[in-house]
Structure formats: C-alpha cells, structure tokens
Image (cartoon, rainbow, N blue to C red; front, side, top):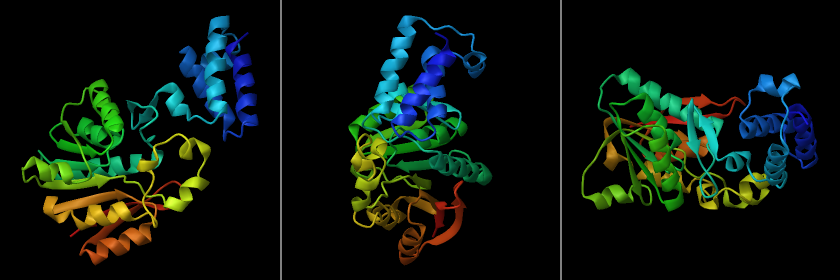
Length: 282
C-alpha cells in the first residue's frame, strides 16, 4: 500500500466521523506519523509497511473518536516554535498568535531593553516562551494554577532553549504577592478562560470532552477573569505599563476596562473580522 492510498482511507474515515477538513487532517496525521513530506505523500510512490499502516490506523481511530489531533501528535506549531502538549493543557489557537505578535511588536517599539512581562494563565507557555524567544533581554513571568499545564510549559521552555521565563504556580497575581517582591511589569498579557459557563456544553466534542474545563470556563458571563486581571493590575504595572488581552466579548471587556480607569488603545481583529485582542493603558 502507498501512503497516498492510506491517506484516502484516513480521509474517508475522518469525514464519516464528522471531522471538519478531513483531508487536511489526514495529510498532517500521515506526514507527521511517517515522517514524510507532502511531495512524497502525493507522489503516490511512497510505499508503507504493514507496521506503519497499523500505526496510522491506530492514530486515525483516535481522531475519529474526536480526540484533538494536537493531543494525538503531541505537539502544536506556534509562530515558528513547536510546543508539546497533551490532555490537561489548553491547545494554542491561531488567534493567540495575534496576541504574541502584538506583544513582541510593542516591546520592540519601546526599545527600552530589559523589559518585564507577565503572562497570566500561561497554559502550555506559548505566549511567554514566544515573547522570551524573540526578545532574549526580556524577563517573562508566567503564571498558571494548573500543575499539569506548568509541567508542559517548563518542558516547552527547555525544548525551545528559552531560559528567560520564570514559571510560577498560583491563581493570577497570588504567587507574586506571596513572593514578597514588589515586581512591576511593562506589559501584562493574558489569554484567560472566557467561555460562558452555559456555552461549554455546546462546543465541539474536541473541546468540551478533551480540553481542561478550567481553562475554558469564564464564569456565567465569561468575564470573571477579566474583572480580576484588570481590577488588580495597577499594583503590578509600571507607570507606562499596558495590558494585552485575548477576548471573547470585546464590548464586555471594554466596559470593565473603562470602569477601572483604563483606555482602549487599540483592537486587533482575527481572520473572521472579530475583535480578538484588546490593548489597554491607564
């Protein structure tokens, strides 16, 4: 059997299981599992062994049961870096790349050097590590309440040879307060949980049945974390410090920010035209 024949088999299986864009996922699953290029796959000449066929079938079966492809493969690409992940840590999305890109741009424009950044709800560490990788003179503090997430984040820092991130376990600003050190940051960045509690059960099975609920649940109106992040931020921001947030309800976050005396400096839209990233300053 050729890899192309197996690709067609897997595509049919995933399509019948309700997987969106089944051919693309089949392509990724096969090329990554077999370690071959797209050119080799579509040439129709790459022969696979029985052992390879069984291995692909095993992974395809897992995907057909709606286990996220990223968990099956064990990694995700994020702005040119590879992050390991598995069940218990939120899967980084393309929208979050917008936040990391904007954070890097803002810090480069300031040209202050030795900036300090705080990443709240760091999860896999994708935001913190990407910023730190691009700005080696910057010190990034990354906080999460999940021990599982922090294990992945620490591993990802090692895998990407990033040493200027300090990981801390706790609830938002709590570990900073407990440390006894008064640290102020030039930028606070966060992709916090922002799904309304009642909406979680309506999400795709890949999300509601596999990803950690605590990384999704933003409370009754999806804004619980924004109230706490924005409301307690002044104690941890420098005089010109800013906040960069990924949001699900831009109007709701705007209202919270304005009520706390912050200005909305800018809003960045995602590929669907939705205002996904808000930049705040006092």
